[in-house]
Amino acid sequence: MQISANAQAVAYLVSAILFILSLKGLTHPASARRGNFLGMAGMLIAVIATLVGNEVQSYGFIIAGIVAGGLIGAVLAMRIQMTAMPQLVAALHSFVGLAAVLVAIGTFLNKRDAGLLNALLMGELSAGAIIGAITFTGSVIAFGKLQGLISGKPVKFAMQHQLNALIALVTVALGVHFAATGSIVSLILMTLLALLLGVTLIIPIGGADMPVIISMLNSYSGWAAAATGFTLHNNLLIIVGALVGFSGAILSYIMCKAMNRSILNVVFGGFGSDSTGAPSAGAAAMEKGIKSASVDDAVYWMEDANRVIVVPGYGMAVAQAQHALKELMELLEARGVEVKFGVHPVAGRMPGHMNVLLAEADIPYDHVLEMDEINSEFASTDVTLVVGANDVVNPAAKDDASSPIYGMPILEAGRSKQVYFLKRSMNPGYSGVDNLLFYQDNTSLIFGDAKDTIEGMVNALKGGGH
Image (cartoon, rainbow, N blue to C red; front, top):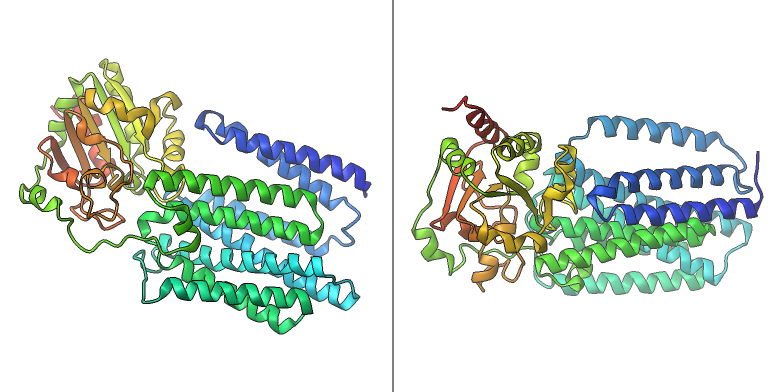
């Protein structure tokens, strides 16, 4: 069965509309599920329309690829832990980049043999290969950092930015030469240098900045897909690539503002943490030491509070404590305590990481507020419970001009009457910057696994701890 080009174009138009509606739905947790279903429907229509188009002459390899990929995807979907979602996203971005490179090379070889090469097509092939190669190796490095296969610390050396600029210029020059001459040597060198550039751009990125990198690589994968769309003369792939490219770039910009970073630094790499020890303004605070507390201490404050704000971070994801937090919320609300969740845009290891985990635990969407919505409420809050967050509540971002995170907007948890900080140890967060909130007079630390600690609070509220 084959459909006409006009029928395929209509199907692609419907898919494009569904993709746009999907992105609209994904802008808010309450509509995210609907957005996902719309995106899935759009992709199903697009795949079917492509398979029954005139371009497809044989289904053997296509069916084999769908079966193999479907099986791998199904197994991953069932086995993946939420804590591993960031590295899974990075890995999927790498596949998009690698596909763009392979399509560019394969198209060049096929068109060359058929004598169908032209300057415009060669330019498209150059763009697809370069963007795809950078996306592939950049995503592989991001995956390695997030998975712990390589160090999450920034890797820096002298003349790093100049080297990146030189590699980029030579890569573009080779791309122009390839487009003009069709030289396979230029294609190979251009691709190899672009693969190298993907590595050198990402290795100087510190672990704390990985959420921005994930969104930026998402943007790169979109542009790689769009370039592939031009190569294959597939309008839907161009539209989808542009949607992903622009939405990823916009998200990166929003997250850069949330971290007081420059978007140009993200694009060109090398904006990782430069922590060089304890910040000077924190020395006096750290001399005070810290106060530790027990589960019963926190429960005593919370059950008599008017409002409790929970600030989740990556520690919550590691401990899988979101379901215990849901039960704690319900018990406190049964006592008339107002409970809200304050989420920083870059909490966790990828955009929306905390929102996904809280939604998984069926915590109502109206309880989950973004930084700008909730910051004004901390001053009138009795207890703030920080669960595994670190940099996003660190007062050094506001008070210490020598700190690497200075200028980064934070959740102002320290303004509440009492802060309880759930920590495994005194180790600093992913950025390596010591948290001055630990040393404030109104802050107490509860050491241990976040899930175990919260379950202890739940038992105490139920009467098991008294």
